[in-house]
Image (cartoon, rainbow, N blue to C red):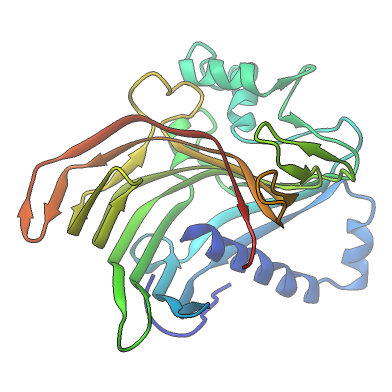
Length: 334
């Protein structure tokens, strides 16, 4: 499938959602009654995806607009983003389903991969559930697991990790609109590989109080993704790095985001990890109702071998064991 929306070049999960939404439509239209009868009674469905996405502009408007211009998503060198398999299951009570690197853990248990490998050993421990490998879910949970269609040689970890390649480009991110616009970022270009990604919609009608006092609904959307960026570049026109320092006209080249060094590598197979949960909630501080984004966790090593201010390089910047955890946000209108 090739999906083209608008014109131009260029945030990854938004485009992935577009491809997920688009793909089933074509698939459903092509299934006749006999094929549907064969599907009935199966434990879940599998969707194979191939897509290329271009969006000329994404605009968010409040008092002034925020524009993302020239968004592009594809495989490397403009090829299709393909070899993507999405399995969808509605879990039974206590059912164990594929999650994260459970496939590699299973191969380790079978002896196809070396169980003494530190990553494999950690995965076997992490995803082991009562003699199975995956994660246990509750009755009615909707579980979506993204993995490769063809992961190459079953005895090769590298084949699995490099099976889904992606390329992302964004021409510019601009705020303020004409004539008082400000370019925040420009010429963003990233290439890398997507690892196992899981999206779970929990079926739970209860609510609970978070450590910060916020009341949130237990029926929540959970996202957990592994990925690796092997090469990237961008111009950071207005730089404010986590409120630590502020610079202008920053350029980054040769960007890599991974998890290959430091004390937090086992079980991640060299890939960065991003996880978060989203649900309706009520702020303990303001009492406002809104969207709670919680259990946010990001783990990676970040390499910036060329770090420019203006046209002058100031050297290289490297982060090891860069971890954001125990983070929560309440988003609401005003």
